Length: 242
Image (cartoon, rainbow, N blue to C red; front, side, top):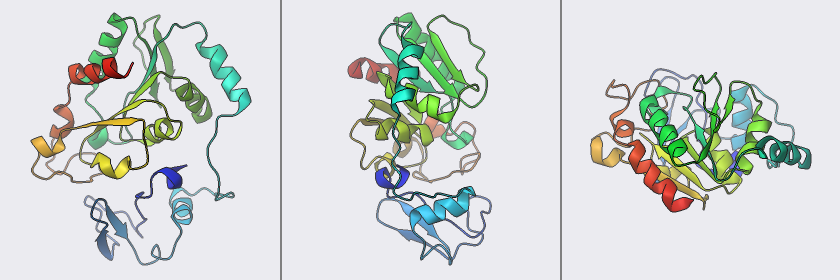
């Protein structure tokens, strides 16, 4: 799925160093849109071979395309049946702070959605303590296949630059993608149902920085480019898509 839908996935490096990831890297290569980091052993690797080494997991079927099974679809239908439409999913954070939308804006958006009668699915790898009868909690207690099956049944997904974003794009779910230091044109080339929100070029002279570290290159937390995106702006896009 990742290879099919995102040909710009970063190549591997021999040794990941501190930002900007120059340790063990021979040189940087640009394809005019997305900078790639290429190291000596990665030059001859297929992208999935490289991902296999990086993740430490054996990928036996290199032609694999992710699909929600019939059994998983039945589970998701039953799981969501007691909730009214529309149902909007929100991923609470990305894997690093530099790509995570400020939590106060995430919470404000959730409150705006609930005030307007929209059921919200929260997605995260840690527990989410906010209680509301219209919030479906997928934070910290569900496996990735259950999350994917739920995403396939959403009316809309809201996510930062993350793996969940690619589930939304691959499953052709209307998706609002919130970007900071990366250019969304790189990540979304083949996704027809993903709508990016990105203000990096307006608020930062270093954009795009492509940082995957824990703080932005200016050592500001949260990143200025993400702080510039407000819940009200995202909600306006929600109203257009629902």
